[in-house]
Image (cartoon, rainbow, N blue to C red; front, side, top):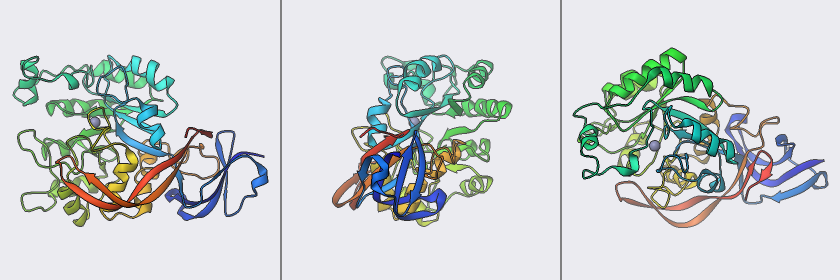
Length: 380
Ligand SMILES: [Zn+2]
């Protein structure tokens, strides 16, 4: 007897090369069977997924979910899990001095599965919501890169990562001086963990990234004052340093965010062959009410950019699971995998999708979450 049976859905599981009508049976929090016809009377509960898409629970590889610990964060069960995301990677909201409350009050108390990149800066992104030239004149000077008041302790950072390997994937560098990335490289080399770096201070920053490291904010616009790194040069050609980074095995992540996704850059870069490995939101309270909203909305933007449904699902399931080192356990619907499942509807209509430059595109399809199952239990 199965605990739950999902009938009649289009199962898309890139890990198994599946994109066809299948039934999915779940028992004891795990996938039990994926077959073309499983008898209904063998299940305690059923979901009819006719005209719906059944995929492994979505994985958002860049969001900020240290809710009530770091003020930029969203509440992960509300903003992620209920929108179809069953696993989220917090991208450096906390550093070694404030990771413990994040673990104790959020990671261990949420229904969604949470991993973290520890910020190279000891206090993480604690100042992010409080930037203003009146209140923090020295900080603003630092943000403009004139000097480097980084608050970093490499030994303590390494200690916290080592003590929390089950939660912490690696080290994050963002927002501040490039010296932070140099220090992040030292940490990553000493304990063999990946770095997630912002697409900033290009091309110097790319030389710190190697195989398995993650470059986020892939399609950010050019802003020389803020040192944003645009993947395209003035002639809209891909900079050779990015091609070299891709050859080394650097993971390209979307990290849409409030200021990091430009339609024009994405359209041209994809035409030049630069597709994302992983599609993520960079969700925080500054973009959860638009233009990001949630992961399915971000995925819909990539359908509009011409990526196939299978590729969009791969970039939000199989690939991020591989980056997390968890492929097989999550990111797939193969038997024995954790029963994290998202059931989506591809609705048709007229939808306005906005980038972070205020530019709009009209799409005719949108992915929307209908049901979310986490470890075999129905969330919505
Ligand atoms: Zn972020």
